[in-house]
Image (tube, rainbow, N blue to C red; front, side, top):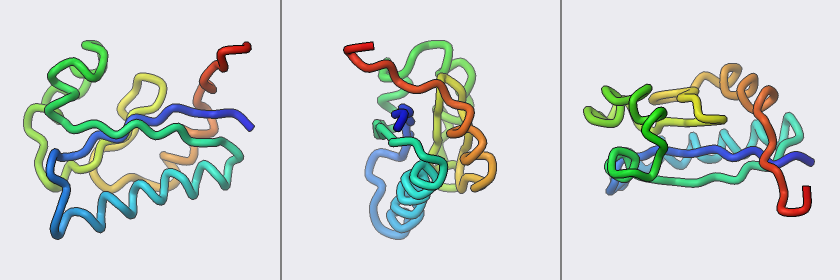
Length: 110
């Protein structure tokens, strides 16, 4: 089974009324990964961390407006293979296609 790295960008506190949405999207990522036969290596970061260097500059430039104006309707963000796949509630088919076409993470042995 291939492993695909997914970066999950969320608002810093991610509590209260927003938590169920973030939890549901996190679960959806893993469910779709299981459907398509890929193991998900999920890295969660905040939008502020993304701006402050947790993401490569090319990805931040691609999503500058998203990261700098993160609003509740834009949470969470999903990045696969250096491309912002989704902002806000993801489309299941878009996410599935992105995972199917993602380059797997290379292991230390190969």
